[in-house]
Amino acid sequence: MTTRTTPLSWAQHLTGPAAGAAAQPPTLTLAEAERVQRHRDQLMAALRAQDRVALVCAKQQVLEAAFCPRSDANPVGAQDSPAVRRALRDLSWRMAALILPRTAGH
Image (cartoon, rainbow, N blue to C red; front, side, top):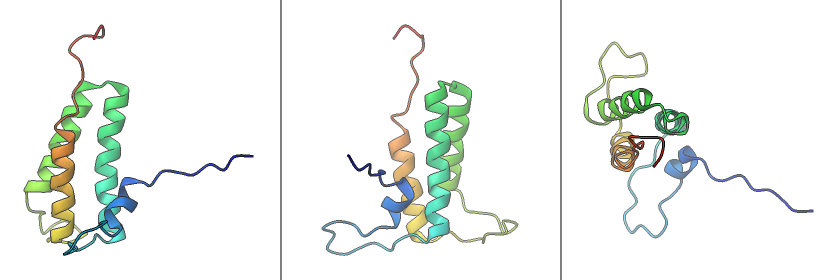
């Protein structure tokens, strides 16, 4: 009988300690990690569905979350922590490589 291990989710990866880091950057709260995870899940769902419009929209949302300050009307809070800003910027760099082929034949 084989045991099946589930891979670490993006949220768990982001909240975990950095391996071998001399000066550890601040870690995300669970709510912040889940927020970044939702952005990543949206990107991956659009990529799997090969939906170009959804992928562009998801990329734009990540960029806005990473580089635009949150509004005071947001019930979660007006300020993002440095850790969530860093995680969103990291995700924005990683998502830059997510592209769909122009034609189905490639």
